[in-house]
Image (tube, rainbow, N blue to C red; front, side):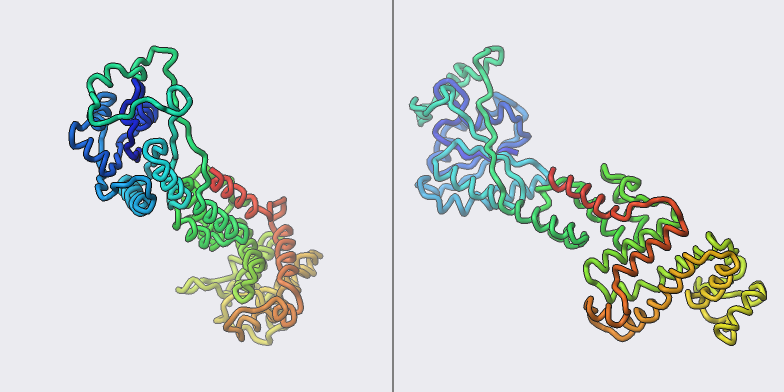
Amino acid sequence: MLFSPVGSTDPIRDDFDGPMLHIVRYYKPKKVYLFFTAEMAKRDYKDNIYEWTLQQLDPAMQIGKIYHEDITDPQIMDKFDKYYPKDIEKIYKENPDCQIIVNVTSGTAQMMTSIRIFAAQADFPIKLIAVDTPAKKSNHSKPVDDNYDKLLSWENNFDNEIDNADVVCRCKEIKHDNIKKAIIKSIIEKYIEVYDYKGALMALQQAPGFFSRQLGTILQGADYRLHLEHNKAQISFNNTNVEYKDVYPVQASDCRDIFEYILHLQKLGEREYLLEFAQGFSPLLFRLSYSFLKKILKVPIDEYIRIDKKHVKHYDEVKLPDKYKTELIKEFHIINYKTPLNTANLLPIIAYEAVQQKKFDGYEKINRLRKFEESVRNIAAHEISAISKETFKRDAETTWEKIITDFKSLYQIIFHGTVDWDSYDAMNEKIMQYLRL
C-alpha cells in the first residue's frame, strides 16, 4: 500500500514521472492512498489528473483519496503531525499485514519531516521512498499548475519508454530506525535472556508488525516447553522453521519428561522462584527414584503396584515380594498399603537392591536428595511468599544449584548418554534469529 502526499511535481513534471507516479511504476502497490491539501484538492476536483494518470499506468489500480482541505498553509507542520498518524494507522488497520510504503519526496519539506517523525515512532513498519529528479539535482522546471494538460503530459512522458536505456528507476529507500521497534526488541531480548517467554509475548503484542509472524509462534512454543506442555510445544515449533527435534535434545517420552522437568526446575532456580522450586522437588525425585529402581536395579516394580481410580500408585499387598515387605517393615514398622507410592517408601527397596547389587552411586544420590527433600518440603509447607536464596540455603542446608547438579548426575546414571543441559540457551539463540529478521 502506498501513502502519498500530492505535490506540485505530481503526477508528471517536465516530461518525467513525478515522485508519486514513479513509485507506483516500480513498486506496483495494490492500492494508492493520495493525501490532498486544500490546494491539491482543488486541482484534483478540476480535472482528476492524479487518478487518471495512475490508471493509464495500471487500469486496475485501486485509489483512495484523503482530503484535508483545512490545510491551507503546507509550510506549517502542526496539522500534518495530527493527520498523518491517523490516516496511515487507518490504512494499516484496513489492510492488516500489508507493507506500508510512503512517498517522502512529494510535498513541502514540512510534510516530509512530519512523515519521517511519525515513521520513527509508529507501531508498525513503514518503508520510506524518496525519488531523485531526472537530472539528479534540484528541479527548477515549471511546476504542475492549473493549466496542466494530462493527455499531453502522459504522451510526452519519457518514463513510459521502457525500452529506452536512459530510463532508470530513481526510487531509493530511506533507511531509518524506528524508535518503538528498537525499544520493543530490547525488551523482548531481556525477557528471553531470563527465560520469561510469556513476558516476551506480551511485549511482542505491543508492536507485532515489526517482526516475523513466526516469532510469536516460537515464543509460545518456548513458553509451553517451560511449563512442561510438550505436546503443545511440539505443535508450535513444527509450525515454524524451528522444528521440535531441533529444540528438544531428548525426544523419547520416558526420559524426555524427566530431562525437561530438571531443566524446568533449573529455570525456576535461575529466576529465584525458589518457592515453586521447593514445591516441584518431590515429583521429580520420585520419578527418578522409580526409574532408577526399574532401569538400573532391574526391579519389575510395575508388577508390584496397583493404580487406584484417581490414577495414584500404591503397593499391591498380594504381589509385593516378601523380601521387600521385610525392608519396608524395618523402616516403617508397618506397611500402610493405602499410602501412595513416594520416594520415602521406595527408598528401602532401593537401598536393599543397591547393597545386593553393589550399585551405590545412584542410591547415595537418591538418599542425599531424599534428605534434602524433607528440608525443602518443610520450606514449601510453611512459606506463602517468595523464598530468598539465603533462606533456602539455611533451611535446606544446601543450594538449589547443588540440588540440580545431583539431579543431573542421577539422570545420567539412569539414562546414560550425553545430553545438552544448555538446550534452553540454544533454543534462545534460535528465537533471537527470528527477532533479528
